[in-house]
Length: 236
View 1 (cartoon, rainbow, N blue to C red):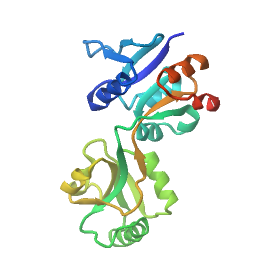
View 2: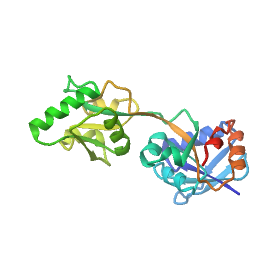
View 3: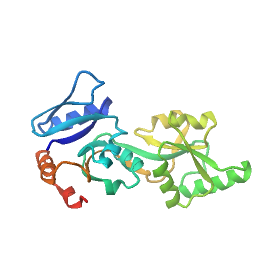
View 4: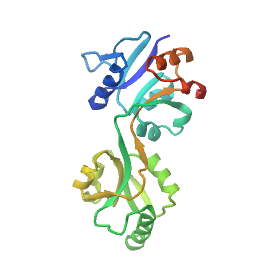
């Protein structure tokens, strides 16, 4: 049975994936017609590449429609409520690194920790009569962070555009978003809290627990990549 490998369909992440596999003697090429989701693989038999938007790969892994997939850890942990039941991380790939952080206006000089944010939120509600708004695309991960730090008097507002601009636009008081260098936050007069990031993310090769390929096929693929099949013992 052919093993289906989900890969990002465009951009830098796709190029880095192709380079990572090429370094291990496996050539991957997408068909010239970008409307098609298929491609070719050389250097190993029995692999079919499936090119998808990075955000679609978690869903396809969970459904078992692909056997392996490369995407950001943030995507999998945000989009799958039971990500550790649906997938097994097979390898961290060393690229696509970014931190999910909570950031506040630079003018909030007394707000540097989660405890400070909790106090600021209480004061904000007392003054304005509504909860302090945090704009984010990462609702699941940020709700968990808020619960872990016992922060009250905040609400999440959805942002599917440029999250860093929501504070200047007056639609939020703080944000939670992915950052690599921090330059975009700085340009929007924001700074991360002096806390560990909510998540340190990077590109990961995930194995689907419900994939249709056999354990032997999956193990052979991982060996071809120079990886151990530690994931096999964790498959349900």
